[in-house]
Image (cartoon, rainbow, N blue to C red):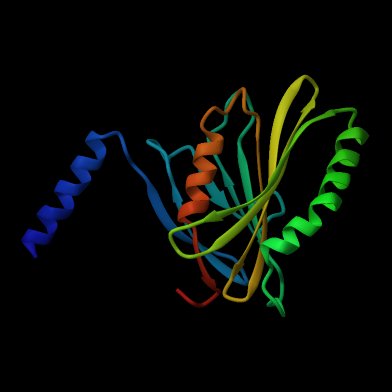
Length: 188
């Protein structure tokens, strides 16, 4: 027992001395529970909670009043069929048209669309992503739509941030998605 305690203490000291600290915790929603690791030296300014109308939102530290945000919304009932990457690619033209209208209605400009991609994570989840960048009120915003299956439930999500203000947001959200785990509610 003492040996395990010393081992744990040594690993903790080594991680801290390399400037690496992370916080991993399970968060519950009605349908799905998520295990999220905050990949940051300082986790105290991060917020993970049901907020902004989302069952679960991950908010990175604020800079100039803006926070990089990730939302996760499981569908209310299990899906009859799992989503596939081919379906995401087929949805791309509709996604683009919807985003172009959204930005135009707000007097902004679309800068770039990102091709659909697959994020493989350590828990064997295939996370599908497509996104775009746009300019609104002289600020660039990057927004990505994410989708993945979790124990039969389709999870829809989004990441959004201002790259000029949030230099680490893309790397942080990518790390969260590569590490995220999930189980049907009641499964942890």
